[in-house]
Length: 71
Image 1 (cartoon, one colour):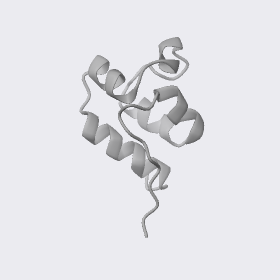
Image 2 (cartoon, rainbow, N blue to C red):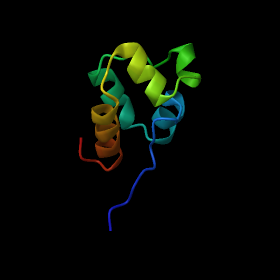
Image 3 (cartoon, rainbow, N blue to C red):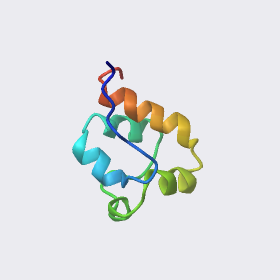
Image 4 (cartoon, helix red, strand yellow):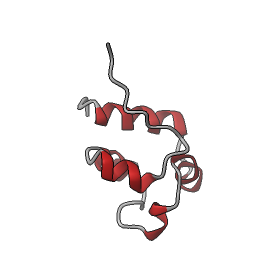
């Protein structure tokens, strides 16, 4: 059975990076400025993707892969 990390578009970016440190590499790979950004403590994944003009589905998929250790 596949274990899900339960990352969804309404989760706060900072919370995700703290809970699953492997996701930081994904954020950096997308050249998002969320790491150490004070807004990262408030921005949801959906908001950050919109702000950085990044496809939410692809980004979420890569976050999930990082959590599972596939990236």
